[in-house]
Length: 394
Image 1 (cartoon, rainbow, N blue to C red):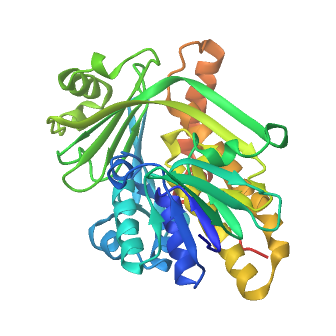
Image 2 (image 1 turned 135 degrees about the vertical axis):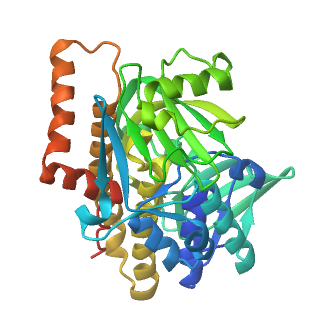
C-alpha cells in the first residue's frame, strides 16, 4: 500500500488531521488498533476552545456541533464559600467556548471520513514504524493474519500516550518532563439536567468539584478523590451525597440526581516530551503531552497540533517548503507549555493537597483572592480558558 501521509490512531486528532488533509487533496491512510465502537466508547472532554471550534468548521465537520453544541460565555468559580463568574466573552473581547462532547466530535469525524471514501483500517495489530530518518518511511501492521506494508512520505503519530509512535523514537533522543499529582478525579456521567447553565469549578476543604455537562439533558460531574480509591468504593448514592456536601447550599438545592451511565477514576499528570518530531514522524496530541483536565486543554491542545501539522504539510506539497518541517515541534511546544502552565496553575489553585502545610495553604488562599479581585487577573484566566491564538506557520 502507498499513501502520502500515514496517520496512526483514529481518535479525534487523527481523524481531524485526515479530514483537513483530504480536503486539501493530500492522500492519507488512517490506521487504528481498536474497533470503531471502542474508540467511540471513550468518555472524554467536552469543552472546546474557540480555536478548535473554528478548525472543525474549516474541516467541514461542524454542522451538528453548531446545531447541538452549547456556546458558553462564562463559568463559575467557587472559592472559600464565594461564587464568582468569569465572563469569558466580556474579558476576551468576544471569545467563547463550546460545550460539545469529544465522543460527538469523534462521531462527526468518523462519518465525514466514511463519506469521503478515504481509507481507514481498524483492528490493525502490531503496528511498527520503520526508517523514520530516511527519505521514505514505512510502517507495517497485521490484519486478519496477514502482514501489510504501507509506504508513505510522512507519519503522524496520533495514537495517544501509550501508543507505538513515541515508543518508536530512540529513548536518548527524547527529553521527558512530568509531574504526577497525589489525587485523581472520580467522574460520573448521567442523563440529568446540569445543575447550572455554565460550568462550576469549586474548591472545598473536602476536595475539588467540577460540575460540567455534555448537553442540556446530560451532565458530567467530578470529585477529587485519593489515588487509593476504587470506583467500586463509590455507589451512585455516595457520589451524589458527597457532591452535595462540597457545593454551595443554593447550588446543591438545584442538583438533579439519577443513575450513572458511567463512572471512572482518572489519575492526574502533567507530561511533555521534547522534541515532537523525529525524521518524518510527527507526534500529535496525547502522544506528546498530557495535561490535568482542570483547564480543559487536552483535546484542544491536540487540535492546535493538528492545525500546525496540517498547515505545514499543505505548504510542503503545494510550495515545496520542506524547510517548514523542522518548525513543527518548536511551534507546537510554545503553545503546549503555556497550556501546561495554565492547567498546572488551575490544579494548584483548586485542589486540596494532602501534604500541604500552613505557608502553602496561605499562599493558595491568597492566590484565589487575588485572581478574583483584579480585572487583569480575571482577564488572564479568561484568555487562557478560551484558548491562546494559534501561531502562524512561517
